[in-house]
Image (tube, rainbow, N blue to C red; front, side, top):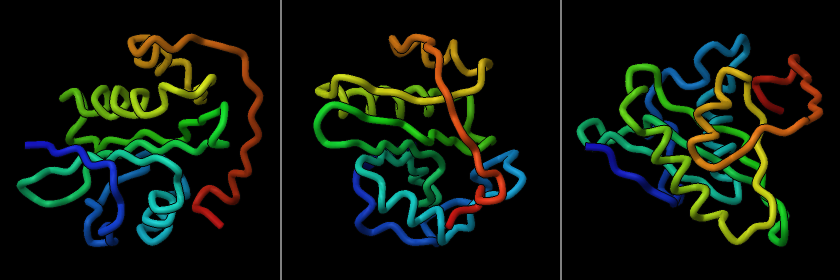
Amino acid sequence: MIAYLDSVQNLTIDSLAAGFFDGWPDAPSRETHVKILKQSDFVILAMDESTEKVIGFITAITDGVLSAYIPLLEVLPQYRHQGIGNELTRRMLDQLSDFYMIDLSCDPSLQTFYEQHNMCSAMAMVKRNYDRQSGL
């Protein structure tokens, strides 16, 4: 059974299942991953109750007034295609529903996923410092 939590208060490195940031050439360490989760304004975790491990998460950062940005949505490969990403996204969009704008960047192959959540494609500009992909 999958439980969804919106608190990271008791989160530790040992709470995270291995395998996040699949396909990243220079993935953040587990220590950095915990920092990302704890320092985000909003977080929702998907936890496999049988293993007591986090197997998915979504984060958001905001200005607290008008704008919210969803930088990360991750579900471990072995848990994909079970509706976990959809549920994480639905819950996060519910939490952010009072904000004027909710933005995220994604690869074109993921746009149809977000369109299912009433998001629309828009032009964006991004800068990536790939030598910093594992974190500060």
